Image (cartoon, rainbow, N blue to C red; front, side):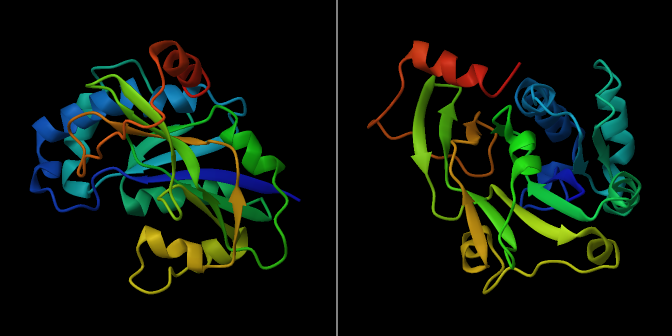
Length: 229
């Protein structure tokens, strides 16, 4: 079964924060991206994936200027508009039979084996989504980390036949179309602790790290080695 994995993120194309179009916001978020998410992508044991971080066209020049201040991104990690993203995905995946579209936020982490897990996974007939319910929450400001479970978090993968995806078909999330409704689709669960939700002080929504189950500093260090270089 031929498949390709694309990691998909809306860097500043969605959200209610008007600051997401400003240079100051973009500079800080790119700094956060490079401190966390990029290191997670670079740590993947299988680099045969395309990670796309979508930006609105009017910020393309600013993003390009900010990124130029840093070492070049890996060839499989890319920032661009929604329109250009479609062309990138087509060039990357069009010869494959299946496309796994994995959602990611630009400040979070995936386990270093995540891409390989997706290539190894053999879904049942009719499965539309894979859902990660188990992960960690990390507050980098307070140095707190705890294992977490979420029934239907924003760490899911939509499974497509590549030809159908490139022809315009998209999975429709039931109800209000939010992450919490993905669980209503025909799905299977990925059981490892595959994600780290990072709280860094510039999140759209900050979550309080519960006291129960918090990891000590040695445990945190050990866990993060599984997620970042």
